[in-house]
Length: 93
Image 1 (tube, rainbow, N blue to C red):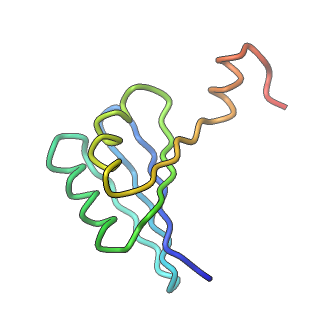
Image 2: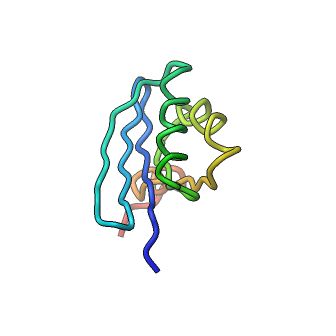
């Protein structure tokens, strides 16, 4: 069963969104981080039927976005291998 999925890349002043729809469409948008833009992102995700979303963010910038989305979408925080290697002082394999 195919489903519509979403990935977010959160930066200090922008959020990149990619939605892969079950019917094969790909929707890409860049949003700002001020109050009404995360709400617009949430509305887009709701209109496309997104139930789960993976979010990549290396800092605290994810928190305002997380708070807007957490009541309507199941969120997964995805940390990069580079960040994890720095957190644990190990070299990536």
